[in-house]
Image 1 (cartoon, rainbow, N blue to C red):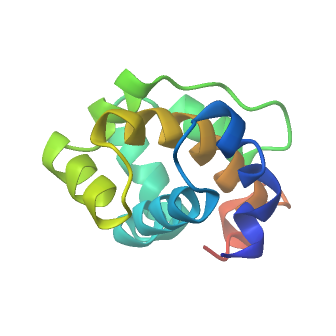
Image 2 (cartoon, one colour; image 1 turned 45 degrees about the horizontal axis):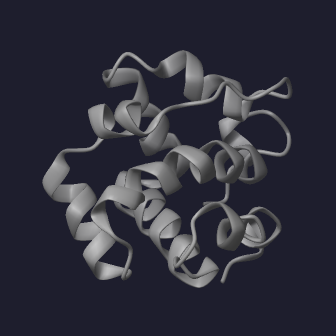
Length: 120
């Protein structure tokens, strides 16, 4: 599991019973990779009208939260289901996990507060 998510995944087992931290980490990694990294993910959120949220995750201030239904507005249901199936996560839980973990993952991938610092 990448070091990027290691610090945020400790919470997963208590918040999302039955989902292994490794599966959740791989789910987030897949979403980031398939989106073209942090920059591509931000573009997806901007296209869905949620650019302010993604920008807050990159910036050095506090992160705006996001809901599972907002995640579902960024990614088509078939894509969420494919990610979930690939990593052994129930489809109904995948959007909840992503809503919880993506802000933290993007924040950690952009420690300088800019997309240029992103390595994911």
